[in-house]
Length: 216
Ligand SMILES: NC(=O)c1ccc[n+]([C@@H]2O[C@H](COP(=O)([O-])OP(=O)(O)OC[C@H]3O[C@@H](n4cnc5c(N)ncnc54)[C@H](OP(=O)(O)O)[C@@H]3O)[C@@H](O)[C@H]2O)c1
Image (cartoon, rainbow, N blue to C red; front, side, top):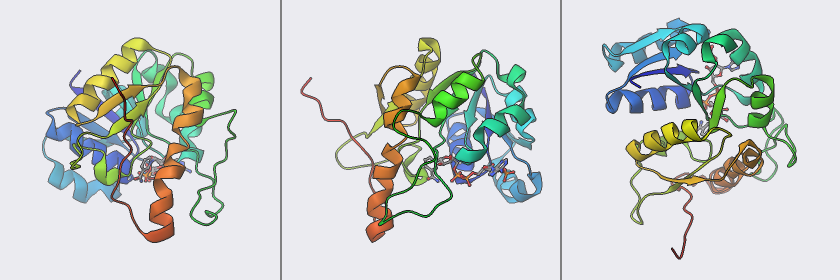
């Protein structure tokens, strides 16, 4: 798979696009406002394209979803569920509510018995969603360097082939992968973003990633 569609043009979409380009992939970044990516495109090189959400969905053999959580269901509709059917879609999104954090603790519009990825998977059953890249800041998404070794990326999804695709990407991007099972595990993975953000929001400390320590 060399062609990756990136649905989303924020810092996560552009960071992961740069990561895929660095590792030799071709990318198409989808946005509702292509003009705002002209500077990024001019620096990104010949293997980078910019278009609509639908262009990115059609281009990608594998796709990344990196849009504001509250817009994710609607953006998939705009991108075209039929173009995404059967494809692996890496879901980076978090269900962050519009209400402000309380003492550094983000508010979510989901509960602990629900998750954004379950809503996406239920609405679009033919898409192979895999949660990944949601539990770390964008600065560390691509080949992070920490003195204690590789951090852990927590991943989940219903389709084992799709998770194998994403594990290969995570290997290339310098992560240790922890597969936490099916889509319901997004109920635990998505809130890791709340945890990750607390040191940043409370004391402006953003230079960390999560690691699962194991005896074997
Ligand atoms: N920032 C991080 O470090 C980080 C880390 C882990 C996970 N995440 C998650 O990754 C996702 C992307 O985050 P981000 O920081 O890159 O930026 P973001 O501001 O959350 O999302 C930007 C993208 O969302 C689209 N968008 C926003 N509102 C929309 C609407 N009403 N309708 C259609 N599209 C809309 C934008 O469209 P246009 O392209 O048209 O502007 C843009 O492509 C989020 O779900 C976030 O929680 C972020």
